[in-house]
Image 1 (tube, rainbow, N blue to C red):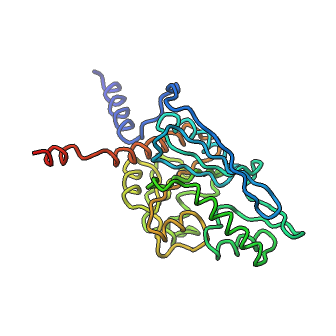
Image 2 (tube, one colour; image 1 turned 90 degrees about the horizontal axis):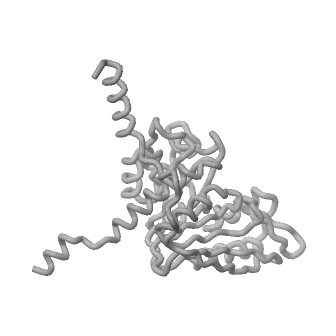
Image 3 (tube, rainbow, N blue to C red; image 1 turned 120 degrees about the vertical axis):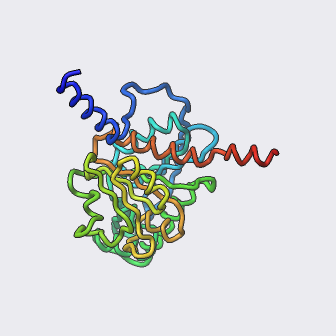
Length: 281
């Protein structure tokens, strides 16, 4: 083998070790046929729909989409859930991020990822125009209804989000970033786009995703800004939550990250074979 061939061989091998595996080029046949239902909820004087899609009978995975304009995440999740099984809950909001609703002659607007605390609801209504105590109660009941849709069997909530180039990234949580104090640990990988991230309340999931080379943030559940977001809500409950986020349009990257996460979650649920053998002795 000549010198150039050796160099190419070494370079290729190094890249293969560092770069996470990608999704197969062709989609595999679906294992689970989706079953959909729309649940109407009266928010103020507006009817809004929660679309709940179930893949398979045994539901151990729950993906939730709060911003209806973040379609890349939902498209990727549907493909993955057809293979892995689970449930997808999404707010139907005419492809808009924020939700507006008429109530007692006025129109109120809020970010649906800022409604899981009274403080968060106050802040998001005020930031989007106006608030009053009765409107706060309406949004609070809306959030409670959304949380009730999540099955009790779910041990980890997977939030589906997308972002735009440079607007929100792993750098946001590094030293000097506007959310540096929200993070307990940050892993930034030079092979990954800074906008493609995972953010979790759970150290085990942080370690697993960062080990694969994905940009990862471990939320500081005690010091994080209490902004009413779903990650803060679950962090305060000391429950597992993870947000997978890529730029709009990066469906393959999103599917890869979500597939790896669900593989980890499913592996955790397998019985300990060695322990079962020992128990049988």
